[in-house]
Length: 264
Image 1: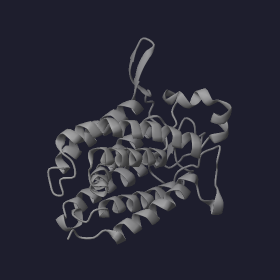
Image 2 (image 1 turned 30 degrees about the vertical axis):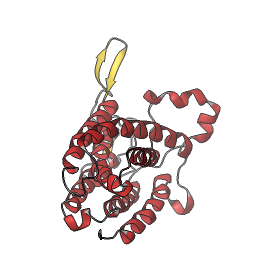
Image 3 (image 1 turned 45 degrees about the vertical axis):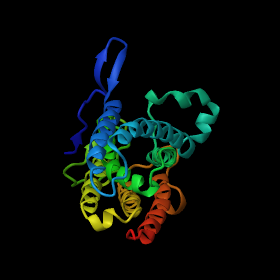
């Protein structure tokens, strides 16, 4: 009685040999939506950036997401393959992006942009971290549309268990939707609620720490339902690569929240 994966074309629009893929659309919608949301956020204390600086940072954020996400996937998930096939590193249209790599790329963009414009680093980071879950939400939905990153085998009586094209005849957890809910929607709402608390918003670094901790927890939980990458499988202690990469986020996030202080 398992659900069959809906036959969704990975390309939203095809024009001759060219195609606009849902995955690309998810990135575009996430970036544009995040840009508009950021413009609203910076209108409140501590006024981390001007509207013009928000517009400029969109380019930096895009570069950080794409370059960091791709390099993270290459280094964390398939280093030997891409070492043997270095030119395929540039073929981003074939898929293969890592959130943890993208996060490092965006952090680098925040650091460089803040220094160049003489902005408060943690204040800028707090704004961007409040927005990031929006991109995660659309990205995980795109993963589901593509039928990729599906879940582990599900119990026979799970009403929403689904058979994915690449997962064989076994009914599986639609883990992409679990992650869209946890990493995206839930974390987006939590970060917005925290942002609305002026006392927390003015504690530079607290919101950045809350996001890192929240994402780390959401990713670790979500990975218990997600099928490990075929080329990696389970690693130390039965953990997945996603779980291991999320552990440092919990530590850094907790430290940022603990050290965040009210302005004097």
